[in-house]
Length: 351
Image (tube, rainbow, N blue to C red; front, side):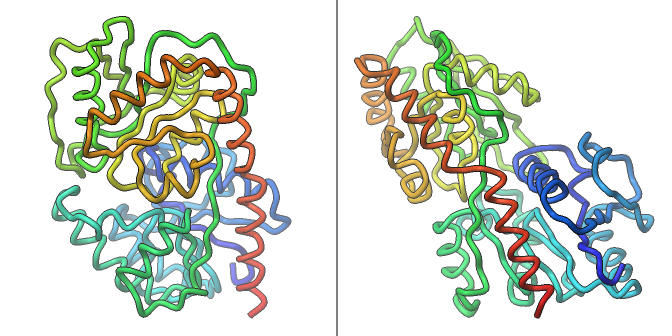
């Protein structure tokens, strides 16, 4: 395996959530566009990701989780003289120094109270050693690059490459018949700030519009802030497939996201790729990516969101906003993303 491109395939045995969805799409595109063989090394446990059937997967070891990633995986890499390991999901084996690591954000460093303390503790240790030793760090926005340098100022900036993501949906330029509901796609944890959306809808008293919140609570990781939604026309949808999610987004009047912190904010791009406009918190990364078309509000001020919702409902050129949202999404393509990855891998191979 000395000359093969090797990927840390632990994510293929995990439940498919945001980071795993992105890793899956990058893997599919790399395998399609790269002219060299790519091997995905995985724990010896059942695959939870259906795309594993189409990838060149090899199961190794006896364990799973962090023990597999930090002990069994690096021992295999040393024994087989692997020269480069690609890690798509924020962490990599500390004992192995020839890592490319994809870091999506620094949320766990920004505010540990958003996470279970054990999760925050483990990630802090892994980030410290991984980022220091990595050959290359890839992140998903200029904002996230600044955040990495804020918490780890000794890292050489040239060591960090920004590679944008793309929508996981097939594009839909047609503005479908929009129905009387808004959609929010995020997990129920304080960082995602669903509270501001519920408070805005309570103040609006919009009985003709339903609010659909799609996502899970992820109790084992996040500290949940359970919210009162009694009396509101709110529907919580858990474990929605990508097909169902796309259908819900296509029919929504708009996507609303009030996050305090994101590394990229993929749900907004997915909405725009099916011609659904977005009302977003005015955080730096959303301004970087979506400033051309989105409506913005202060995530600490529900009444600002109230006004933005009213503005969108009353918008005379709403169809034009849908079309401009779609046009912005066209700037982000997986073919471009995969070519950036291939370029990075080739440069590291030739050193």
